[in-house]
Length: 281
Ligand code: SF4
Image 1 (cartoon, rainbow, N blue to C red):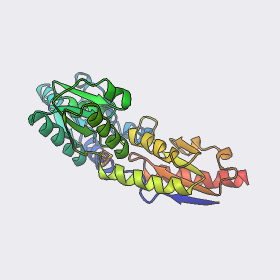
Image 2 (cartoon, rainbow, N blue to C red):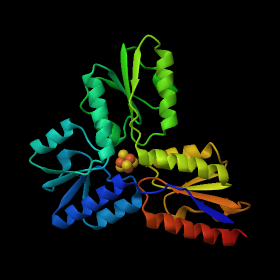
Image 3 (cartoon, helix red, strand yellow):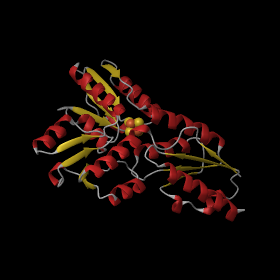
């Protein structure tokens, strides 16, 4: 049996930097993070162990310092936070800032903004939080429900699969042939790298294991992408989720991980796969 790791997998620079900043700030004084810093239970437990609080609304913050996550937030939320007298530390990923600037430019240039992403995801709420009118679409049905506008400006949540985003942009163009449709590709490079490496991996593997939090969008997208090329794909949060029966008659096992998955969690999953294979043989 062979275990293949995807050429690109696991934690991205945006998440690494955000975790490092949170730990540094927690050493300097009491800290609250606005929402989950990353969608990974292992990382969240480590932050909680450092005494870092999490609040889902600025009104609930009880420390003098508040940190915005790598997913970013809107200018309106930042203004509300500062009005409460809180010191704001921004861990917003530079590539999320790129998406914010793209959305702001589209709105300023008179386009009706459409974001391809999950309506309730914290990043999408941040991207749309300064707009008075916009739409969020995730599938064909959402596009079919759009109203006509003379000019559509489309951007994407940074962790969406870019092929899906392009397909939905094409669908908007076909549904509104009279409208101008401008697309700005805001899917981040680490997401694209992990997606294309996952395709290569899934083509070669009999079973693919995707490591990442259940609420992690990019992990879910990796699962969907791998499932297009491999019939046996399993998502695990930690090594404890790995089942020996998955590896019966599986000469090649592929391993990939979402952008919020720490290296040591991936290593433990790989070690557990090796153990399971011994049991299965
Ligand atoms: S997934 Fe992309 S946008 Fe999000 S933190 Fe990582 S690099 Fe930044």
